Length: 390
Ligand code: KIV
Ligand code: ZN
Image 1 (spheres, protein in one colour):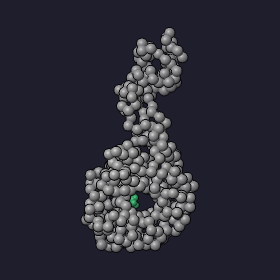
Image 2 (tube, rainbow, N blue to C red; image 1 turned 180 degrees about the vertical axis):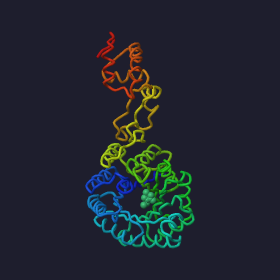
Image 3 (cartoon, rainbow, N blue to C red; image 1 turned 90 degrees about the horizontal axis):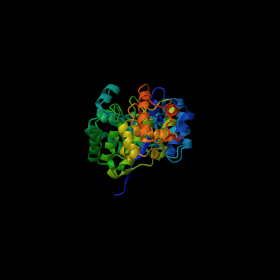
Image 4 (cartoon, helix red, strand yellow; image 1 turned 60 degrees about the horizontal axis):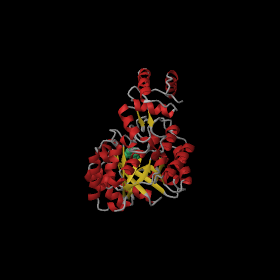
């Protein structure tokens, strides 16, 4: 069976930009949209046009410039929202309106003071309005993660009948366990008679650190689109990380049988651009794009890595555009790492020299978090055996 394509729906410019402090202006959004298109994302969620004149103009400008990816605008299930989204997208070559409403009983009662039947009607009506602007309409059932499956299936069937071409099943609060989220998708596939008329999308939040696992569980169960952001940015604990899902799919190509259009070599460069533009640092231990993602610091790991990189690295850093593997020297490092780093600086020593130098190195290492290049030069300067060649 040929591998199946997973569509990557990037929402860095919408859900990602909702993060306090991450606000972007139109110029910044347009520049990032061009990078995202170059990266190979299939859909760019450019913003929420009714939310502010600035966001309207960002969606409009992105629509003018993006030619390969679909450009999407978010709206609530409100006529005015949808009309404004339609206007903001009027220059898009491939416009998509993303509309929806909360479907969990909690949202229905607490947010809308409505009934399940009323919400279902509003959902259908919203899709109908959106279809007046474009044939590409995505419906989101907000808080689907906590929505009763039977009711969710009825809503999804109705919105597909009304013309939704993608159905988004958000785990808005990041509540689901991977097997529960996977079962929800499987339930929809087996209980929604017209489900073959739409693409199922996963939109998972990371409140319990399960966003990537849940999205992968979703595609294993039959979803074909993942909504994600660069660096996992997004409301609260964030969204599914684009770089993580792209690399899970790539690394497990044989097990999963999926592929994406993402150019993996761009993952680190784009992560840095997004981090700088949004002024939001990336945690050092972040998978794929963190500064420590390819750093080795304990003696056991360093020794194994220097013998064969595959012992401690499942991804070649070049494949994701990272600077390369790093041997970081700390008080937990071993002799082979010290010899390796000294050799990289041009200092070649015998085993005996390294034994002596290692004790001196440990004395320095115990006083600081990391032994740096200048410390190594200092060590080498203070130790001048016959065997030193540099
Ligand atoms: O998390 C969520 O439910 C959302 C929707 C607006 C798609 O971001
Ligand atoms: Zn979200």
